[in-house]
Image (cartoon, rainbow, N blue to C red):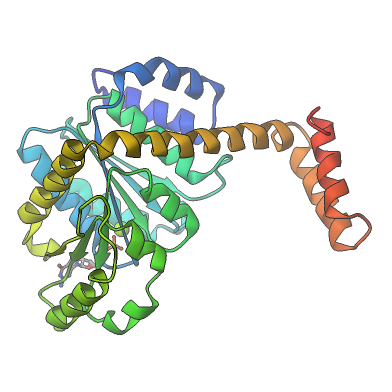
Length: 308
Ligand SMILES: Nc1nc2c(ncn2[C@@H]2O[C@H](COP(=O)(O)OP(=O)(O)O)[C@@H](O)[C@H]2O)c(=O)[nH]1
Ligand SMILES: [Mg+2]
């Protein structure tokens, strides 16, 4: 793993995805070797060009001698092909490059949450010497917001033509963006979108002295990628210099520890044999008003010795 061996990384990720007990032991052993990778989250609506940008950013980092790990989280079922296959094909330009590792993760049933699995894969990449970790998620749900909150720097990708939707844009997305990427700047309406974005961002309070900038890119033509990478580096420096980084990391681990406690408890309560069946049975009883939800929860907790 630490030598960055591709097969070892693959196997470790599979262990995490399948929630194998060895995964935790592995992460425990690897943890002291982590803390060096820089995590960039890339989020935005489907089709805005996130995969294209991640691909170009990855190539940029590789050109500068940095090792890259990519995690593509996509809500599309792996069986439907679609986006995941598309990502794989597009990123095939890097095939055979040992300094680059790409993994698509499905959003299907991760006990303990997708955000946790993503965070653990990011830790693996970190231990495997990937200085840059890029995480692509579709900015639709809470799950995805949780994922990008793991990142050191969050890019929110927007494209012209969605200008009128910008008012309806999730406030959450607006708040988590450290850098706004105006991709498909080759398209009509780029100026208008930039104006709208600027107007909107002028209302957002700068966080720790950082005003989120808007960077124009044309992913397909590799335009603006160098500026984008420089802006990410600038953001990184800004935080390292201000001492905010420490505080942010403590906040980050607070959230992660809560998540771990949650998933550990969930596993203990529902993970055992018959756990899911018991949950379904009690849910049916509550829905039919045969039982109140508080009694039901006490019953479930009692099963695992956690009842009050
Ligand atoms: N015109 C134009 N098309 C782009 C640009 N960036 C990406 N695309 C295209 O937009 C489509 C969706 O891109 P993709 O990276 O898969 O978007 P994702 O769903 O956000 O990951 C693809 O056909 C890309 O080739 C751009 O800057 N300009
Ligand atoms: Mg994509």
